[in-house]
Amino acid sequence: MKTITEAHARIRSHIRHTPLEHSVLLSKMTGANVYLKLENWQLTGSFKLRGAMNKILSIPEAERQDKTFVAASTGNHAAGFAYAIKKLGLRGEVFLPKIVSPSKLEYLRSFGVPLHFHGQDSLETEIHTREYANTHGHILVHPYNDSDIIAGQGTIGLEIAQDLSEVEAVFVPVGGGGLVAGIAEYLKSYNTDIQIIGCEPTNSPEMSVSIERGHIIEELIAKPTLSDGTAGGIEQGAITFDLCKKLVDKFVLVSEKEIAEALLWLLKNRQMMVEGSAGLALASLLKTTEKYQGKNVVLIVCGRRLSFEKLQKIVSSQ
Image (cartoon, rainbow, N blue to C red; front, side):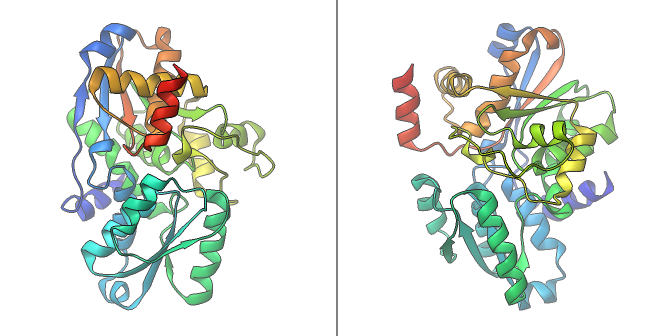
């Protein structure tokens, strides 16, 4: 908990304390007391700004000014990283997989940070970027496999605890595990009875399958998913694996149809367009409502960028 409270003190003037909004309609639908943690309202459109800013500010100022920072991402981590680099007046480069969505790419270009393309998925890009950083003596700002990144994401848990005194369950999207590990680390220290539910697409369940098998898997090939922000493999040796194994109480896997329905529900009923990974938490709650009757439940709405092409596909499929 200490590293997360320190991270909060370090980054709070650079980020937005996002709303924790009670949803009357979802509460009536599910029988739970449902709250939405609106990280889609974060300054760069997702929670990733927290971890990137904390990692960069954790480096001594003299070293920050002297070094170049590099990051790999499918989009949201890159956006948080680029925002932080520009705001702090530092040097940075971003590596992206070739499958990055056009909407995210257009946004990233607006920061003026050099962009490089390598690989077909996030894991391939991450491995290449680490090698590049080591070769050139740059500082790597990893999307999840870093204690400073995890502590930054954990400030979401701190804010939830500040805004809601009795939290009983939190539904968190899971990709590399940095978000869920940080939130769980803080909230479990705050109250061990809080249930942490990891939410994954059935088409890309790398973390839950890795935990089930007892090691980080390499052979699982992810299928296409609306939740592109959580898709792709996990780096071997990632510290998030053991944290998720220890702190996540259970995983819920949801289909592409269930993700699409969750996204459309938010659009129709909250006039809120969010990305596929942000639909995972709602889809997971809707799939398991009978277990959370009368409980205070928080859904992490992790990001807002949904391409127009994906939105068209979702609407036409209904």
